[in-house]
Length: 351
Image (cartoon, rainbow, N blue to C red; front, side, top):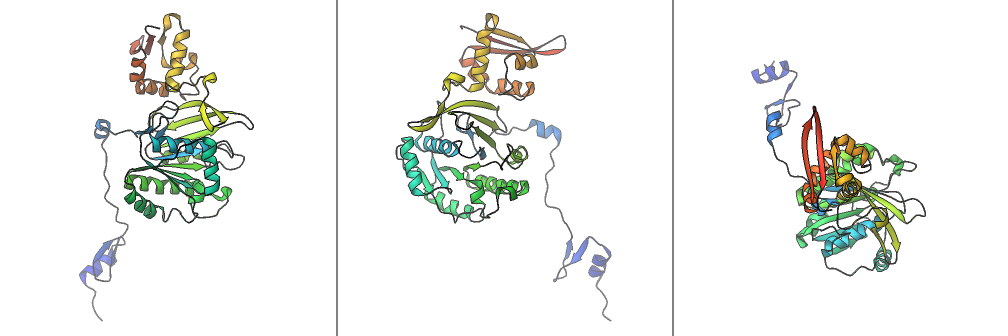
């Protein structure tokens, strides 16, 4: 009987090893190279936040646009696409100009043409449409690589809708949370590899305001846009929820001629200022001497900022993020401590 080699005997004795066909010892479940971050190194690191494609509205990476049927999601993404392709500010917000690819998988050329006509949009060489149903998440990366080779300035791809691009004809109820997270991961990888961004339009499941557990899915996207409009109403609200920027809500109005969303100025909309800044200015205008001094919690409550900042901690970060805008509008923000409490002072000069 042939004796086992020492290498084979060692491999057989160790349950964590095996021998390949060429007698090389293989470590079972060998972990990949993993980098550990020490807390002080992590704290000392500087990471770039996602940049704007449309100031305060649309960010680099993957954005999930959520809204019920017939609320106007396609009109909204059409406006965003046109703004970026033509370099035209949207509602007063500056844009990053580049080529846009609109994967309009729930429409056809005739309907798309009629909608563009109803919206009064001018033609542009930097906006392309695809109506084919053959694209899916398995062949999308290859297709986009070829498209970008012809159009190097491609910066935004709109997917209308996420359910269509999946390439699997499950019903919405069968579309699980795990599947949705996996699909977003695919888009994130493509966005990173090809240096472009996505808007994925998504319908909530029936009788649900939380699409596929979108609070959990949000952890995988760069930002989320939620568009709401009561049935038969012309008024809507666009909630912008970035991962690394302040959350805020923009009041909108749906007009028919031309067909588009506009700022609802009657309900606090302002084309020249971020909504968060507008709310603070409105609050200071009503304060004695146009100033406030107190805790962030008191400011959050008195200025009624719950719709813009989910808690006082978010409010504090938002004030820091918009510090330059406040300074441009003659508002000073000072922070300090009094009787062991963190105090913030806001004053609107030259009111």
